[in-house]
Image (cartoon, rainbow, N blue to C red):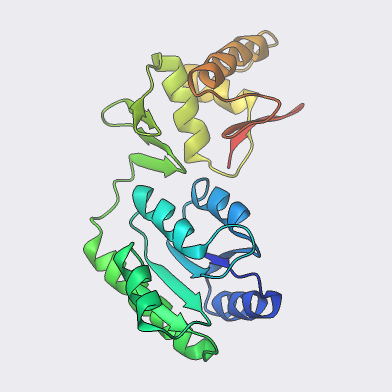
Length: 226
């Protein structure tokens, strides 16, 4: 399970991270809202813990933006105790609200409760559908959506993108791509052919080799997503 933590108070963020890791969660920790929001749209987050008072973006604004695109649980952290703040957070999509100072074990209990509820309410994920940030690829229906817009991909482009998504976070070599797609042994000119397909994919995804949002080039090895 991936948990996003954002709090500009380093001691609190570090403490929450420690407790979460002790429970076996993968933690994405940030001290500002900008980086946290970027992470939410590029990683498979299962739950977010957001501080309201942040130096750059209000935590309530982050919550609202996340809720526009995702349904994962959101727990708000705040030093405020007024009822109106709690109501505001819950109204814009937060699932729970913890007031500082808090006991870490209590927060862990709430994290587990929210994840249990989310898992019960979420349909079993189709292993043939992969979502990475704003990108969703459906192998059964041969459909690919980016920011809720359909990408018109050739069968080869789709197969390459699926292979990269299936191996999210791992480098897929040119040799692997060639053998997976064509079932033949890699040969010297294969690299240039695959480079062309990757370039077309990037163009359709509004991505770039210099500043990639999705497809990254690992020079001399291959490509990866995430």
